[in-house]
Structures are given as C-alpha cells and as structure tokens.
Image (spheres, rainbow, N blue to C red):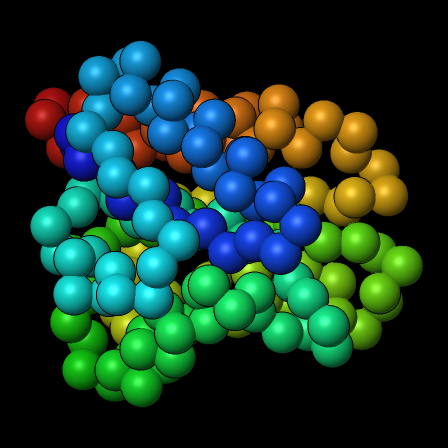
Length: 159
C-alpha cells in the first residue's frame, strides 16, 4: 500500500487538525497522501489504496457541511459496487452527552462504504470528546493501527 486519501468533515476544526496530523505522520512514513475536505473526492477513490475518513457529527446527527456531499455521492452510488477494491477506515469524533446521535456521521460513513463493497480495515473508531483530552494523539494512534493492519495483510498476501 502506498497511497492514502484522507477526507475530513469538521465544524469546529478538531477533525481537520486530526486529519492534517494523520497526513503528516503518514507522509513521514513515505505514504503518498492527499488531504481533502471537499465533496468532489468520490471519483478519486479508485486511485487510492486506502481511504480514511475523519469526521465529527453536528446538530441532530448530521454531517459537517464540507463532507455532506461526499456522503451523498457514496450513498447514491452504493449499489454499483464500484468500490470493491477499496479499503477504508473511519474515525468518528463525537460527544456521548448527545446520546442518540453520538458519532452518527462516522457510523453512517462506515455503513455506506460497506454497502458500496469496500472492505473495512477496522471497525468505526469513536473518540468521545467527554473522555479523550488529546484527539490528535488518539487519531494518530488510530492511523498507526490502520496502517499496521494493512501492512500485516499485505505481508500475509505475499507469503
């Protein structure tokens, strides 16, 4: 694996900072990375070995405005199985004080990638703002776990 697309949805800026740090860490490990906050990334997905989504949830379980279009494209095209060669993982930022909508945007991304035929590297990883004081550090640890899992899979495929 050599190319990673990191897409983020952010309202207050935390998801953006986490995504930027993940890209920096992956770049230092010689991965080709692209960071995007845009809804026009759907067509780029097949160009990457791995897609990482870092998103917060806003309002009543909604997507941040900058990533809503990306989700809508995935949802509208989920049945065409275009992403069967795509591996992904989702980092969801949320606050458990919003009991019914906690990390809902991340959960929905995870589900729609699966419905699109993609393989999850890990289950949707949720960061609770009420418990995690260092979301950047936790996000980087998550990214390292994803990369380690993919690297392990690749080495098993070679054997």
